[in-house]
Amino acid sequence: MLIETGGLVALIAAGSLMFGFLGTVLAGILAVIAVVVLSLRLTSQFRELTEDVIRMTSIDRSHRLDPTGPAELTRLARAVNRLVERVDDDISEDTEERIRLSSILNSMREGVVVVDDQGVIESANPASVEMLASLGEVEPGMQLTSLTNHPDVIRVVTESMETEKPISAEIELFDNQRTLMAVSTPFPRPDTDVVRALLLLTDLTDIRRLDTTRREFVSNASHELRTPLAGIRASAETLQRGAIDDPEGRGQFLKMIREDVERMDMLITEMLELSRLESGESALIFEDVGPQVLIDTAVKKFSAIAVDAEVELNSVFSGDLPMVSVDAEKIDHVFTNLISNAVKWTPVGGTVTVKGWVDDGTVWFSIADTGLGIEPEHLPHIFERFFKTDAARSQTGTGLGLSIARHIVDAHGGVISATSTVGEGSEFAFTVPTDRS
Ligand code: ADP
Image (cartoon, helix red, strand yellow):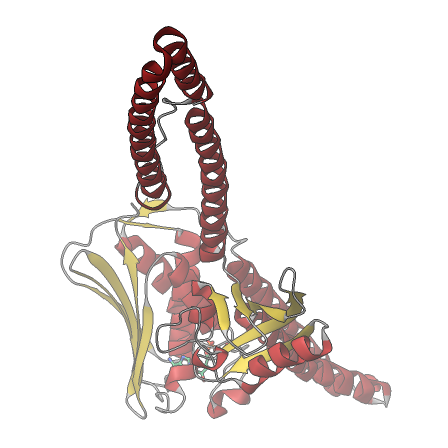
C-alpha cells in the first residue's frame, strides 16, 4: 500500500515536471482513477478476507486465510490463521478431556453425581442412575429429586454444601434392596463463590449381605456346638458327683459323652466342608463316570443301614445313561446326604428308591422315600444352612447336609430340588451335566 501511494506521488511529480500545469492536472486525474481502482481492489480483498474469517470460525474450522495481496493484509491473514489454530488446539484438547472424563465416569462402578447449590444435576453417570433405581431419564439440568427422592441422599448433598464439609451416610434402598454408602464432598465452581457437591455412591449390598451371612453362621454354629458341649458337661458333672463309682451308670455316661463328641466332630467337619465349598477353595476333580457306578456305590454303602432300619432300599435305571463328567467323590457325598436323610425319615417298612435317567441330554438322579414328608412351609428352606424341621430338632443332625449337597450340585453346574407330601414321602432330584464344555 505504501509502495502504491509512493508510486502515485511520483507519478504526479513526474507529470508536472514533464508537462507543466496540464501535466499536473492529467497526472492528478490518473492518480484519482488509480486511487479509486486501488481502494475498490482493497475493499474487495477485505470483503473476501471477512467472508473467509466468518467461514473459518463458524462453518469450516479447517479452512485457512490465503496470505497473499498487500503486505498488511498478508500479515493480518497470517495472524488470524495462527490465532484460529491456537483456538482450534484448545478446543480439541478440551473435547478430548471431556471425552476421556465422560468415558471414565461411564465405566465406573461407583455412582458419581455433581449437583449445584440449587440442587440441579450438572452430571450423573449411568452407575448412579442404576444404583438409585431412577425410573425416568436423568439429564443434566434436572433437579436431584428427579434422580432420587431418598431423604438421606438429599440430606448428605444439602448438608455438605451448607457446612462445606464432606458428609457421608449408609443408605438402605427398600425398592431394590440395596445398601449404598453415599459421600458428598463440597467443591467450589472455579472463579466463583458457588459451592457444588460431588456425590459418590458405593454399593455395599454384597459386603453387608456377606456380613449378615457370616454373623448368622457364627451364631448358628455356636448354638449347634453348645448343645453337645452342654451334654458333655452334664455327663461329666454327673460322673463327678458319684456316677463314676457305679459301673453301669459310668458306662452309660461315657457312651453319651462319646456320642456328643462324635456329634461335634461331624458338625465341625461339615462346617469346614461348607466353608471350603462356599469360598471355592474345594476345587472339583472331574472324571468321566457311568451314572450306574455312582448309584451302585452309594446304595451299597447304605444297604446294611437300611436293613437295620427295616427300610427297603433299591435302585432303578431307565434306558442307557451316558457317562457323566463329575467329581465322583463329591457327588458320592450328595448321594450319601440324600440317602441317609431318606432312610432316617422313613419309618419301618417304608421304601427308598434311587433313580437315574436321562432327559434332553441331562442326566438326572433322584432319591425318593415313603417317609414322613416335609411341611410345605418348610420345603423352601430345607437347603439353607442349619435348617431343621421341628421334628428334626430332637434328632442328631447338623442341618448342613442339604446345604452341602446344594453347593456341590451348583459347583457342577446342575440343579437340585425337592418335592414332598406330608405323610406320603419326599423326593430329592438333581442334575449332572454330561458335557463339561
Ligand atoms: P440334617 O443333618 O438335619 O439331616 P439336612 O440339611 O440334611 O440336615 O436336612 C435339613 C432338614 O430337612 C432335616 O433336618 C429334616 O428336617 C429335613 N429333611 C431332609 N431330608 C428329609 C427327608 N427325606 N424327609 C423328611 N425330612 C427331611
